[in-house]
Image (cartoon, rainbow, N blue to C red):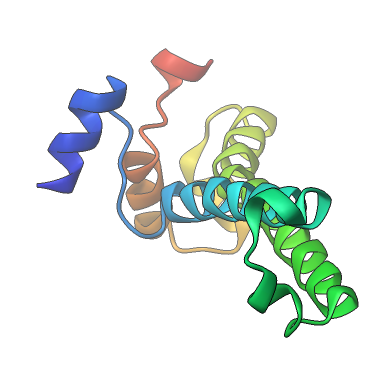
Amino acid sequence: MSDELFRKAFGDEQPTHIGTGWVSGVSAVFLGLLGLGGTLCLRFPQLLTLPDARAKYPVEIMRVLIQGVILTAFVLAAVSGMEREYIRMKLDENGWNISKTAEVIGTPRSNLYKKLEQYQISQETDG
């Protein structure tokens, strides 16, 4: 059900299940927005926070937490595309020889075929 909703909303046919990079990508966007919201709350506390709450949270700890959220968002964003691009790069380096690429990557050929299907990687579309 959610896959169909995302296809309609974004016009995207990429897979959205765990292991495709979608989860880490969406998590990165969510954490990035959360970090932005936290930064705005620290920058404009009179507008975006309650006076009672301001008295109870230590600003330095909140800054460290926000920095951690932003750093995590960057890491997750990088991870979301790394495996897909790594596989494409190794396929190109090995002339799209699946057996040789699987050996170089260190995975069984059947797993590489699954990854190619999962990421919708094909020689026609990529190279």
